[in-house]
Length: 307
Image (cartoon, rainbow, N blue to C red):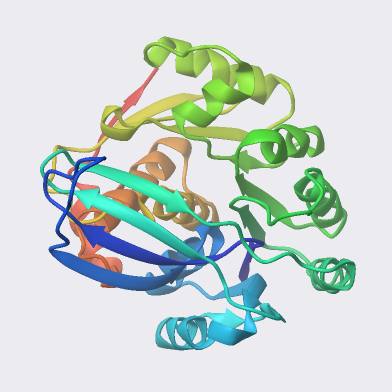
């Protein structure tokens, strides 16, 4: 069973506003709520495609029902620890005309030292398989917590995927996760320089692979994604599509990468499957699950090239 860890989940409220403008009155055309957070979204995409998955992390007891029903509907094993209070809300303003999403993220709940110890115990009990550690850190959680968890998991024979940013990502790299998936902006912030064009992105990814990461997958929005290991470089580009929701599209790519590892696929097919997962997420409605049919339909539309 694949495990996901989400320390700072959210209930994502997506507001669709065509021609959204700051400093002006905007009228909402559609609104939807969805239990989320990066690791939760990864778990959902995996479960919707037939993979056994368990969700670890912290959720607020006061509004846990959103997560309970979300997990139950998808067959996700709920191992999340409950904290006093409410899980944070995340506001996503989607403008279908510009195909842009504006994120407004609230701070999350603050876990106590005992809560972190309880989560450490859950992680220490894992053995074999894959674990995805994803998302931002809650207030007052040490920035090196992902590094600590990755080191623990490696001792247990668990392979790791990390999808985070900022200091949490920088610290975690010291533990050499098997796979990371930054977007190009997160990679630029990590390295402290602009990455203009595909060649610059690939060169940056190769630096991280040389530092011990097994695979670096860099998502570049409409420009596709680069997948880099010590021996191969593959790029993937999806067609221009009518984007219906950007919620969880990057997380779906992480799920596709894990699904490819579970199937033992080569890098080119890993890139194709991961991009198909993301494409299926982009073209679904805000709250609808996307399963194997949607992913299969997307596979043939993805262009793959070796560099």
